[in-house]
Length: 307
Image 1 (spheres, helix red, strand yellow):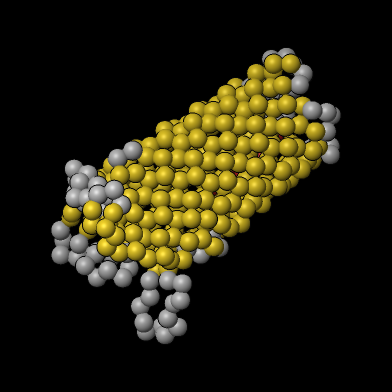
Image 2 (cartoon, helix red, strand yellow):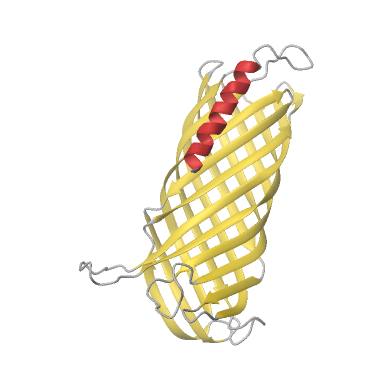
């Protein structure tokens, strides 16, 4: 579904380009254009969440805590930037990553402040994926021949599909093995700014930073606990915020073709929210969702086309 969405966006951008070849900016010397960046990437993330024993955040204040560490894997992405009417632009971006390695721990406590451990398991998380897409519009300010600043605002969705698995799984297909899942969505508006520095006729540097106001929704399937409902064993909701940063170095071969390398960092956090546990007998038990936190970094390299 997401792949087809971006095929549609790609077609729209090409159509807009074909219709705007004769359209010029106010200064009369700059055509509307569309810029494509296609790249491969490798990323690593940490992510954790916890709940309390009841809806008041007590009994104990941390009942259960799950932590993913060093979730790693390759990915790919596409950025499209369309200058609708210079200096006004629209940009769309999409990136997906495929989890190939990672560790996860699941710990329960009987007393406050992570004391009196009642359960602990160190597990594998070598399966799953993450993806992000964003749509934004902005305005480009040409400060001087070497510097452009582009504030923007838009909307994004950041999703995670994570697994909890045994290190040594049973080979007998008749034996049910641990393969629990946790799916989290971070969605909301964002604002940010891009800065483009022209270092030479061929080299340029782009930096970006944004701020996101997020709604957090997650569902889990704890597949080995028979007293829980399946495929939705519990649900988490909360409000949060986040920020992303990016630095990209571009080398332009021609006016159309360039290559680039980039590094990025992201962070997101929530406040308190609600944990809803769904039992097989139809009961719903609510407790306090303490918070969720994620941070990650990545490297990417790709090809840019300016049509």
